[in-house]
Image (cartoon, rainbow, N blue to C red; front, side, top):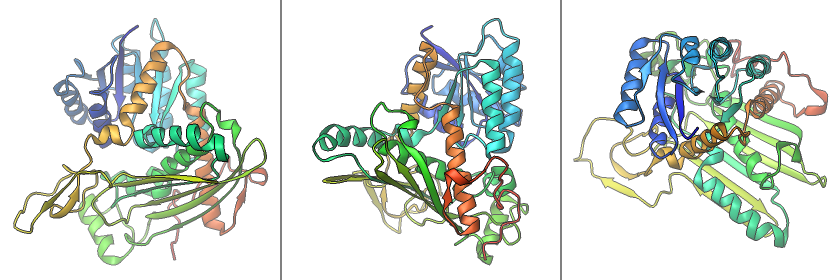
Length: 412
């Protein structure tokens, strides 16, 4: 097979980013779309057609699309609280096919907790469907190229890197469900820390080596509600997303930091530092990465683009995100991120998944890797709640659910 026909579950902001990225990817078309409402599925399908990605049609259900002989693989971008149900529906649809699906790829995080994550992994394993975990920042050009140069040029002469830093910061999510801890599974930690801890781990891992080349030792973390629990911003959330988003009574964290300690095969200590925020004030989304070793370092910042504009106060226009994702202003000196879908890694991850599903080989990241990321996040929430470092040898997280996800977290 030379062309992978993709169906999407979920038709929101993230799926639209994926569609933009697929314009740059060979050997694929988009032929199916499912969403919670038929109207949103129809709109996303129309966008896929507009981009020249194929004759995309909307389906009435996940099971119907999974059973269709016009879809070869499915990308799951549905809200976090639906992950288990979506995978079960895919498995049911797949059972009705003459030839099974070639793959299912799922956006981050894989699940809201380890129990749900295990159910997601089991559903696809029982159905015999290959999986891919969609972690776009690992595939961003700056991360891949930076890692390649460091490990090829610096490591052989001075030794392996020992410290990686990753951060993702912006002004807050687009959709209401992200702000609801019980639906999303937490706040910014669950939403974005998955990116940062996985990218930092990737940078510290030797090229071609598996996840087991680094041993998880411990996690220390902190969460806080720094901005959105203030009365004026509580009201802003209600005005923007509806009265059910009530950060006075059910807040989620808008800041999180996490330090993950690893050991490599030789017993060396390695540190990954991650920071995430929904209360960043700047031009827009900022992704930053650093890798440090004995005689070298690398760094990347997505807002240092090399392209910017200046718009005086006399130039007034509608608000939007035409210059950078999560854009915060329309005047002054503004960076422009050319080709955001590629710069953030969407094109790279989709190219990778498509080729592995077509070739019947295992992608770099599978659902099992996604489950390990969930394990780190649960340890981080546990550490933030107890104020203590979590040692992986002495903790059982299988039934753990963060206080934010249970709607009982008190940030004070």
